[in-house]
Image (cartoon, rainbow, N blue to C red; front, side, top):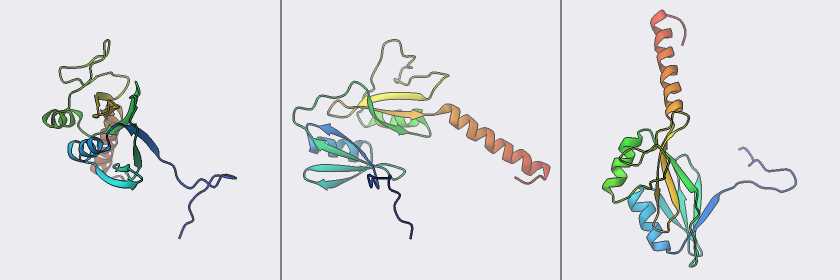
Length: 156
């Protein structure tokens, strides 16, 4: 069995992020029911959000919470249009930012970056769904190259 990696001198074996909300019950309902994440009790009034890919985020109560003015959590999706449609159907509204090239649904389309749409949780924390189009294009190119190699009889 492999020992956990630690940092020299500090003994750090893991890390996680966290953010505050004023109402833990509203957060639990939103993250579990609206976003479909696994939400577990973290003890001492905390929640643990289990994210796809294995990461966890702690959510803690803070009655005087003031939301950040930046995105605190991004959700990578394979089809941003489908994700936005599903969230709209669940009552989520999307943020609009002046000067951002957003379509009617609120999805920003920038050829230099991912397609992204921002929304907030009940506490006003900014979240996003995003699709990295460049990465998807590269993945498709790799698949096409594999297909070409197989058609040529060359090893893939």
